[in-house]
Length: 242
Ligand code: URA
Image (cartoon, rainbow, N blue to C red; front, side, top):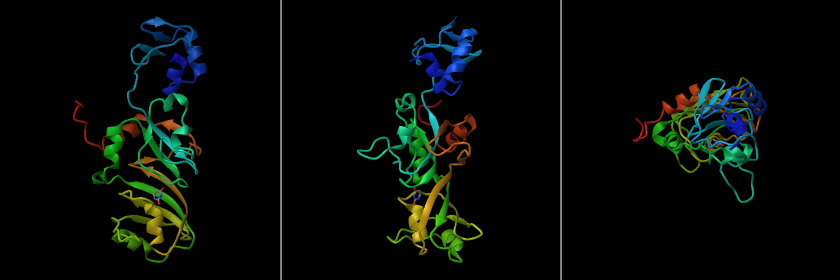
């Protein structure tokens, strides 16, 4: 892999900044300054120092994506575009997958990773991970729906949802719903159970991480160290972790 690509994929600098740093002698491979940022390295074996700091090859990658409408929360689909297509080729090769699902027409916060243990643990119903959704409704929300959500909405198929928080907008044509479970089409079905209909849905938080307002739809960034730590704090350590 080209070293400028390696550095830019890790989000440390653009490829041009990497080339400039190399010319200044700020890029070392196995202890030797490389002046040409197009040289190839083995990310798992080469020791790279960029601007005085050792660059670690990271086994796991954690991404925040602002999912646009029209994409399926999957890694492949026979006909429809999937969320991983929004990532650059280099990241797609890291075999990332979405942590949980959003409907094709739902937009907003999606975490992608190749850390199967973390994803599996966060999605476990035992973990009660909190997610918040901003929604718009076809009709004004009925008085008292907040209490129904708190008590636990019963869906059309008889499933009794856990207590959820609904905070309505002043015009009651939408609001924010916070859930600690993740059933299929859950928000749409909960709102439908109150005789209304969701017309727009956006996930704004997941497990304490908020959608970065600087990301346009379809844009992504790496999770910060603090965001990553807030996720790993929620899950039990892997048996092999020390
Ligand atoms: N609830 C829904 O109805 N759809 C989603 O995409 C997420 C939660």
